[in-house]
Length: 143
Image 1 (spheres, rainbow, N blue to C red):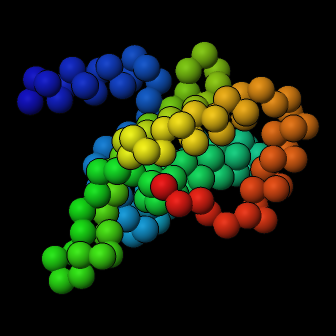
Image 2: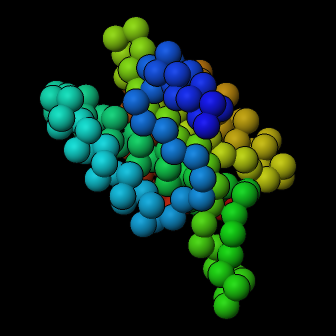
């Protein structure tokens, strides 16, 4: 119990108001989404910030559900991966909101992901908008 209290205090100190770690599925994501919408409404978050935070949450958690290397399959159909493991935190620090999400990936996908992230980091605001629009037209990459 003491460890849980320490974790709770650390999250509050870090400005984290919502945290989830564990196996995620579409159903879990829907439940978290409902809770976040309710929290944003209770906090009277302006519509633009609320929509932006929610969009980022959806995109990041979809990445966990699609790509996490830590997964569990259905015993009846081992080809279907039912659950993917990840970590999600949402909060506010220094007057700014944040969404942080993470998961392990397969080693084979590291070079492609590193190249993609290096490219994204090099873009300005307009470049990011163009890349985002382009990504909406592409199929979801494997891994």
